[in-house]
Image 1 (cartoon, rainbow, N blue to C red):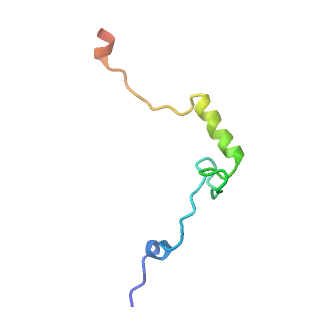
Image 2: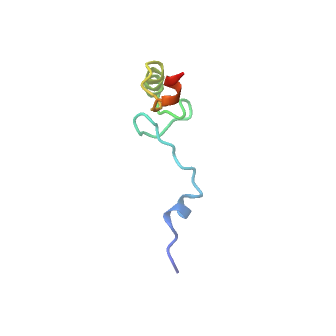
Image 3: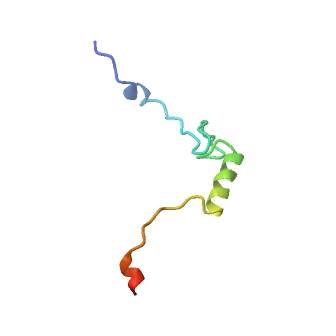
Length: 64
């Protein structure tokens, strides 16, 4: 009998989401983070503009 792939074996269980800041398992109370500390770290990064989308300037906009 062929072995089941690992993904199929885990399909019955809910996959534990990881905290985007430290990688620990997320808690229900602070989801998607593991704690209030990681939630505050993320908020600080947003407020200090650490999260940015890089963009190139368009030369046509400069001409106007």
